Length: 323
Image (cartoon, rainbow, N blue to C red; front, side):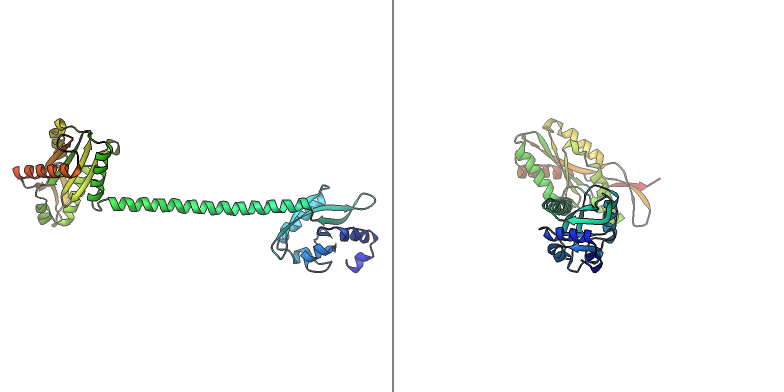
């Protein structure tokens, strides 16, 4: 207690009560100056009476002033959360002190009691819960990013980089799984090989050849709901697995696929001239279960029939300047 406060009999009586309290307790004015405090409160403050709380608190000064001003305007007790130098917040119950006439004397009694301690623990728990929630959100975002990265890597490992179709490994794995999952179900394994594709590379350049392969890949791509798998087996050779296709329908299916490939493609050759090229393709198929039920045997039969078809006719790609 300061010397001026010691001359105030009212404050002296209050000081006696504050000193007797077991909880940290202090008397302050609306500006935050400490007029008296017991030993437990002094341990928190670390300085003598008369010290402004703003000098010893980590709590922002504006926050403290706003809370004290609100407490002065209200007749009801209020809670103040004060954070001292040790970093541990303490919740005080604040009440305006009144004189014998019932009027406020401009002093505020702050007492840290068991109830306020529980509030402090709740606030700390709430703060910890918020930090934990933030950590969980960060972890979930990281997991989503990792799943997306894994899906992207899986797509890259299964995709032919030029055409975007399934690569050999992914296509064969897909067909093998289909044969195992639905044993004996009708399906056709179809191989197609472009006729005289080397001629396109030689005459128009490899860049034009790559564009042609992309066009063919697009022509052989079916919508996802059809369950048709299309892959590039290497070079100018493509393969399709068409589930549900029976042997009787295969000739019509092969003719349809060859017609898709034969659509004219506009390409720019080495000389920079726009040229339309009409390709043809040899095709062969093997049917499950009519020809075989295992992938290796189906592949051997389809490949053999494709090369037999190629030997029947090998026309050069027709070309004419685009109009």
